[in-house]
Length: 511
Image (tube, rainbow, N blue to C red):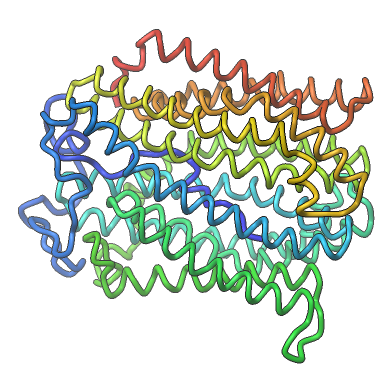
């Protein structure tokens, strides 16, 4: 089953517009080791003064960025490829779930709990991916293309190391990890088999996400989107053939779904490597050249220093969702299957929130670099309104059509009833989630990264989970009660982020 790209979901600084994002408050380009802009490393593929094939992210002079129409265009240009890519990833997850759902509730639960474990792993990938996006964006904006390629290559080394580590540790521990969550024996067996194959292809997983993050940092969010579309086709075809057994192949069930996801990730990582070897045409990034491949501890430290707060935030969120799964699993396999189906449906609403949050992050950073806090405010509030409009509309759909949406995945009346009731509860929190997501993105763009991490951690562990446990287990409200805890936590997150943003403290943070 496909899972969303953590790099595209984690808001980070996208490519700079004009001179603003590449300069500090004194107008200087960010310092970096190695070549100067005037003396680029030609063995990295491009001279540092000019990047053949590099297209302007936005051919707009900095003074024109105060125009509302221009800001609106920049917001949507940054957001839509991320939205489409995440929707594609979610769509493939939905298609996989439709296929797996034919195998029964245990199969749905086995794959579902495995995907939940993967979201914890994505926190580690996000640390590399976020650092990659930010450093590549800074270097490209400063026209230090040799340094951008060094950052890319160091990120590839980190991605390979993390992928190998995940495979070595994860394959033998797959079943014990699933068992720790308290799943039933059949769910443990199926989930363990699924995770083993995912860990086997872990290096392809980390490479695909990190290479995509580098391209976004250089201003090319379309290429990762197109690669995601291609990998979706691979996933569907391979999974369909292997799950049900076609072309003379014995049916593999849940294992076939895992091989479909693995094949897609291998194809995606190979496609991105090929593009970065031969040149993507949209960026100056290349993997060609001997320089930059030797481990550079200073550059690695910079990558991790930028990415670790994002890792902490995502790890807190992912572990919290895993704890949610423990609460829901205790309610029975049918309820957990309903949770997995309903969560996939809800993901269709979340994706635009991630996209507009990334827009707020990037444009806030660029505006503050140009000493234009008013521009940052307008870009962020436009992003908030756009995300709230989309997610609020999806909330209305959930309220009206919840049973119909659930029946698209299963005919089991118990799963449909439980999932429909839970969807209607989640519908009540969609606007709050949009506000919380995008304002957190604006704060990150200003360098205020610790505050969103603290808010996420407090909301998850002191509000959402205790309320979910109380309502779902102690008061017997089941899955709708667990989702009520999520809505209450999201509402408080939105309020706290709103107060922080309105205070204006983010305008004075030095990065």
